[in-house]
Length: 340
Image (cartoon, rainbow, N blue to C red; front, side, top):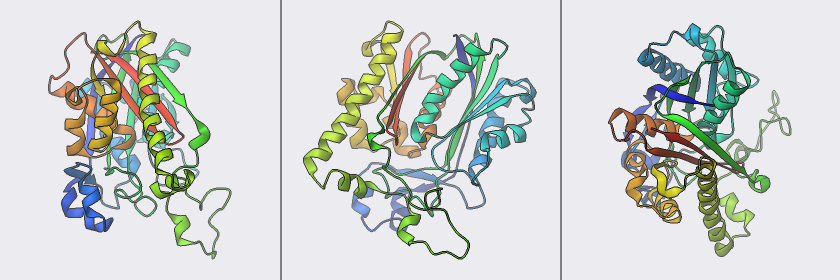
């Protein structure tokens, strides 16, 4: 199945120096500043996840001269929750964009969904020969009452979205393969205890305030019985499975890691990105570490957002391969391989 990425659209929340905002989120300022992020992006309360998605999607359509009525498929990939429960955000975004004849698909598997979305396009194009044009939108809008954007994970979360128009037969930024690894042993990490069917919100009911926040990194330590060696082994495993997932994607097309010019990783803290580069056996300069510090962690949007930045600046050499890699709660590891 051959398709390529024709255009991009991006949008971000308001830029804020991390050093100026860290005290709003935690008293452990030194730890957060040690992550290496310079800037994060926050939206005001009135801007929702679907607002970001619509803005980025409209920009991508305009950039490629694509009429929304031409779209066969709209894929929305998110990290956090959307504005309402029991609500199809993908259908709403497609409607707001005017994609009146498009099928809408909603992907909700956290940070990996942006990378996995290209596999969704490949599958839909393979099973629907009449589909020729898709719009993929990856978006992160942190729900701050539930998720502390600086303290839940060792990252600084930003609000933003990226969209790309994918067209069957387009020769540039051509999709080659996607590989995904899943290990459900860790599915309870970052779970929120209240609000789901197991413990629904009830009119007039009371909820333990602790249950209105997602589980954080201390819950991971509890899972490993506060054993530092076991936790360090888990962290090493994250990188090793990630590298293996990338190798499998390369092997699908007869390539290996040496054939990849750029590895676009999660916009993680500098220590984590350095560790992943070392496991891959590549210089940090071959990753997106340069962009991560300036944008923050955009969740599902990290890889396509950075790809759009590199494409716009001419940093990608035609004919070379780019690996988009992510990992996310579930746990999932995903890699999509593209040819520039």
